[in-house]
Length: 481
Image (cartoon, rainbow, N blue to C red; front, side):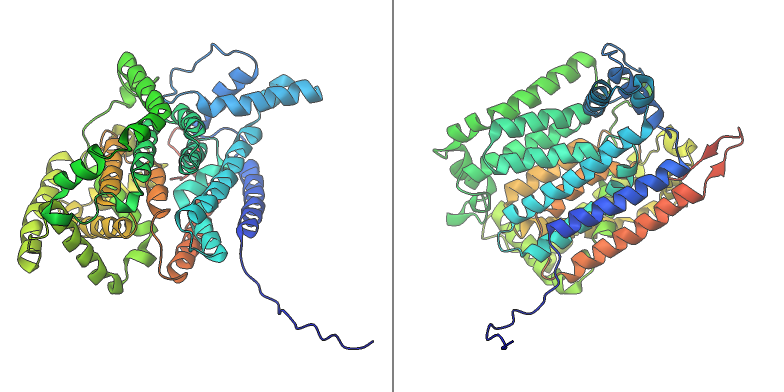
């Protein structure tokens, strides 16, 4: 045979979305097999969740467990799937409807859905991002420990995030009605998602007013932020159309708020243990979470100068271009921010009774050995918290307007401040939404974050599955997030 003159195209190995989804599916299959062997019965809150879903599956739609504090979104879809399986295959309803494996599998499917939507959002938000970069970033977010762990159990977290991401993706595609429906489903999974539905509606309004990046950036003509806000937003000729397009989201938000007022709070059950409070240190804990989950990115001295310039530009945008930002202004700002943070920590640091009593969660040890370890340890965290706030602000401002970033910050405060209980999983949604919008200058921090996430997951799941311990009452318990 004669040799071909066709040039060789070479062989390149890269990672794309199919590799990520396929790898995640294989890992989840092995993980669920291990969990089913080690923990075949419902564990902790699964007792309530599985029981409620089983009642729906059996057709008892009027049943409600008073110990459940969230809306019934988690139970409806898997219950309908289970009912359909019983009807189509002639299976035993009592066996299928109480299948822990089936309900846990629904969260595995939700994690894959999260990864698929995440990849689409990254390509939409960062058109210049390569296929490989988007795949690695998708993987890094998929293996975020507080996200990945709950894909092995029947909890609200993973499906809740999938609905929020779906709401955002549909909004960016201009499908306001579909986005609002996804937002309503997100609220049915977790009540606090109403804040993120409002945020998504606000982000859509900003984008429709000429592009979010163009709205209230630097303040031209000597105008400070409020003047620019009035001219670029409130007097914008397209504001009315933008507000009308956000009407479906407004219906969801107003409907949820009316229910909360009628209900006397967010929780629909177990209200005594889920009373809203004023707990601003929760935001500081979130900042530490962001720093820990993104330390390969935030721990680079090369970014410090750029972050300082971001603060300078924002100060001039807020106070006007004549504002002189330098060491003196920075020191003055620190003299305000540091005492304020110290006051928040000293006056409002409190622990939920569950945090103090339940040693099955890592937060029990974080509280006892770090936050409340000694009188000074909570104050020693302040420099890290302020550095995380500075880094997060600068990372978001690199691609978003001041209004968008301020709106995000306000939503984080609104979601977290009322929560007294220290729960790392409360931070997943705001972290993922923020991470979607910053762009790393190289793949190295993304790969590092993904590898660290995998390592933390392996340790956590090993402890959960193979290192149980016994309470004085004789029950076998397990460590978890």
